[in-house]
Image (cartoon, rainbow, N blue to C red; front, side, top):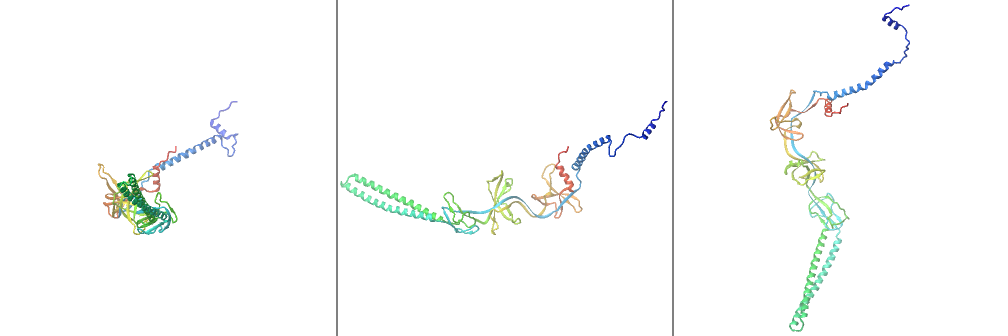
Length: 425
């Protein structure tokens, strides 16, 4: 029996209608679909990395926003100066150490730190007992020598009389020539003894005079008028003046103070003797103490390879508010002006002509309508903060000081562009 051929469409429909032998369990994934899903998870980290790189590139290389913020300031009158700054310390214009010239125990100290003394005022006393005993011994020795001198002179008188007598005897042939010669020798010896004793007496007198001077040194007097600023010894302390003179007190004249300012070698060439100078104190920052530069010491001090020169100037201290070793912020004024037009240094821009020549200064002014215009100006004294304007501006004009990013995000992007991070890939 032959089979009748059926169309393919009928065969597909029959196959779809006939039941299959495959049973699907809930939650089960066919093998082919499970393989495709596992491959999709491998691409997720790559996609995340590409997204992060794209965001970083957009943040780092996106163009800055065009909005700008303008800071203006009004032109005002004020004082301006160009000065060399330095740090200094205060010291007395004149001071002296009153010390001991003899050894001994400090018996009495008549002054204390801070006392005001006059010249030749008694300051201290050293125990004089040792020196007084030495003086007494020297006086006794001098008296002994003087007694010996009397004896020696008596012997000399006898020898002179004996030689005259021997000459008469020899002349009358009553004595031998040898006796006369012996008398001449004895006379010479007696004269020598007298001379030696006289020399010993002079030496002893000098020793006694020195001891008397030392006795005077046991009382220490003020060599000058001033204030006691130091007293390194105490009553009862034993002083040894054999090698160095120990200091009893230090007297300083505090009516005038000297400022010792340390100026760097880069700035010392800008200083000239006689220029105006002033300083302020840490405790009184608003008060100026004025003076004039007196001296620049030629020999510098070198600290950690930094060369510093000492510049000195004096200031009066009639009220006594300045003390030694105070720290001072010093200013040496090169140029100064009072009641002039002043603008911030950031408002001035300098331009040099293309063909060369003297650079010109100009500022940007904001007009009443809000427009900006550049104006040439003539400048005068300049420092790190302000500039004097001699012409080109009027008091009250608004000048542009700085111009920067309009918001923080733009500024952050700019700063990040200045500090590029290394590439991530």
